[in-house]
Length: 246
Image (cartoon, rainbow, N blue to C red; front, side):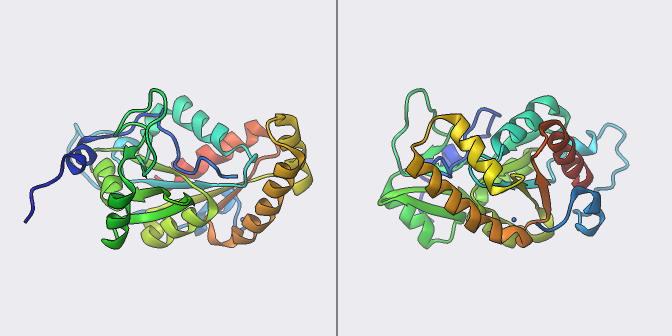
């Protein structure tokens, strides 16, 4: 067996703080409400007779997939959940990318930075849960082994991914993961939010809206839909969904 590379060692030793970034930087369906969570199959409960065992919410048995059209408020909800409820012990999965680090980004914290050649080799070895070539030669992806290392370390892992990536991760984990789709109240409401951001041209907004309409067609592949028409209500629904699954 060949000696393990330094990058592999780094990947094995790293865990991810809340400040880590989702790999789908350029990102930009209706199934059941949170009230119907009884239809979602949770992971089996973990029994223990050890009085010193950590609380259930801290044992790292959860994998949570969040997807949404751009402008739906997904990132706001995830950040709130992770900061307002530290007892959930939630951490982003650490993604791989073939691009170079930017600014203060750190290897193993923000991303695992590897070459395009190594990324393609890992694709050939089926090491990714999901991956995407965002631009020619620029890849982002989630390593299967890294997720399991984080779970074994006691973390409940959060995937902040696009709809396609979310569907692929859910397909891989089945009932061991909960997929949550954050949905805008309507396409028109989404248009108003994107215009209000004042960060995109009119052409870019129309492109995002067209993509959002397509992404909404995947709604029935997610376990839970949270319609973000009221932020406080959406926060409560997301928290209830996650806590119920754990």
